[in-house]
Image (cartoon, helix red, strand yellow):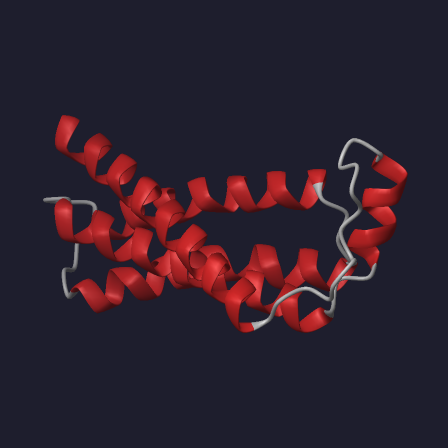
Length: 136
């Protein structure tokens, strides 16, 4: 039981780290336009107006990072767990789904980002499970 909990925890942490690294890579590859982010991040109205101007390519890059993180989470959880591989991989993906949902709630995003963003977590965790090569 402890091994299963630790496998999921390790998967979620590794998936979160992978997501962060992939998002950072996305910011390097697709930098935001100069002057987009307001100087005062405590000004909620200015921040919301700036976030509404974020290019769609940057939003797609975020979704791709979420997908990559869920893939890592599913793969690592499956690799570390001794049994219940698929269920545990999906639990790890669900943990990242919760993080993505929190992100969408607190950062204004278009409806398409909600739909595609939330749709990537569990299928990519499943793919990570498949790539790990264990069944059970």
